[in-house]
Image (cartoon, one colour):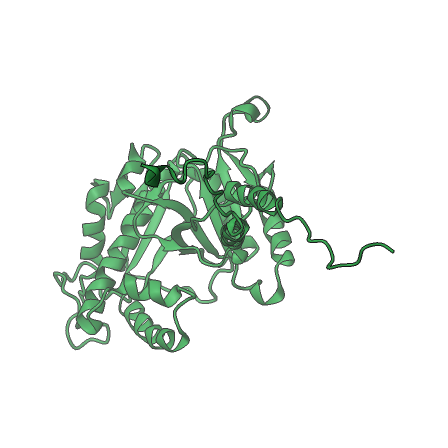
Amino acid sequence: MSKFNKKKDAALPAVNTASLPDIVFMLLFFFMTVTVMKDSTLKVENVLPNATEIKKLEKKDRVIYIYVGKPTREYEKTYGTESKIQLNDKFADASEVGDYILMERAKKPQELQNVLTTALKVDKEANMGIISDIKQELRKVNALKVNYTTYEGDAFRNLQ
Amino acid sequence: MPKRGAPPEVNAGSMADIAFLLLIFFLVTTTIETDAGLDRMLPPIEPPDTDVIIKQKNIFQVSINRDGQLLADEELTDIKELKAKAIAFLDNGGAPSGSPDYCSYCKGKRDASSSDSPAKAIISLKNDRETKYGTYITVQNELVGAYNELRNREAQRLFKRNFTDMEAEYLNPETPDDVREELKEKVKRIQDLFPQKLSEAETSSN
């Protein structure tokens, strides 16, 4: 009998947690390296359309973003429900797009200034009028490479 | 005399807590997915010095109205048929054999009243100011799809793989340089067979 009772009052050994910081640090470094900070809060609705023939936008440092869409609910009172352009953190007029591109371009290193892409993140409910105005402005400042950012998916779903 | 010994150990018990805090912060702010979309080049604003005369038959006119209806080559077209129509137009190769524009790899109908060769064929896209952006993207997607399908066909014939694959590998920054060099030539060759000539006219305001 006594054979089985031997360890009766031995406490449960504590789990060694010495390597926990190492594991956590490993995870931390992983997330630190893959993180891209969200650089601007969206003030417009931004449901992108779907497309199938898409190309990935590599190298985020070569991209300038322009958002277009209806103002979100909290801004609806001030800015109405028509589609608006958002540059960085504020609403802007189509005529300001050119200056914005030039400003952003000046911020980039010299060797990247000629290879910049303008990513248009446009809500699928927006009208083409505003897009045409933007395109016209982009042509004026010679920012000819554009990317219509979309989700990957069946393009015919845009029509519904 | 104070007791001398090894310096006291720093208590590292809270290190895990600090690391967790940072970890959670980065977890919350992370967006891993990369953006993707349709790449397009806008036409430069300066008009070309010489006016190029383009024959009417080499232009495939696509117009979208405010209700999202399509007019392709003066016919009301369903958006689902646009790709097939664009392919038929690009792949037509109407120039007679022997002429400098003759297209030896075209598999189209060789209709003399449609485009001469893929190098001459131009797709012109026009839209109304009230057109929905979603519709516009769908049309763009279909037209790019038409080019990609033809390019894939030629790439399969010449190099036994898809053009879209080759291009994605070529554009991927992780591809080694020697592979990329080799791909560059192939990609260029296919692009020359079916150059993407998609003109975006300024929108009509009425």
